[in-house]
Image 1: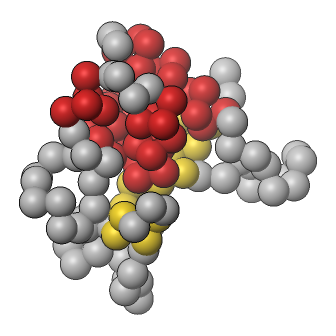
Image 2: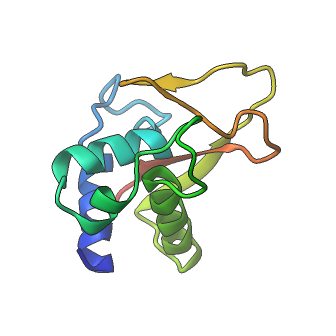
Length: 123
């Protein structure tokens, strides 16, 4: 999958997030990099990155993951001027555990970096 296809695939994932309340002033919900990676792996199981990298989480024994790779990709898109996606971080202050199905525990909770989150904000 080339970068444009990856960009479109992630936009589709972010667009598909249901709104909690139609037209709410806080806009669409954010997805964590892990949630995006899980959806990406489900939709594109034969993508080279999906086949090469695990979704991520503590205890995988690797420094790179699909979640980290997609977060970096999205961060670079935003930095280059993409206005369709908004990014941010969840602070790890007072946060002891963050788990995603199936059994994926966030690996950066004891680090100084926050947890990447993204959402679709429109064209």
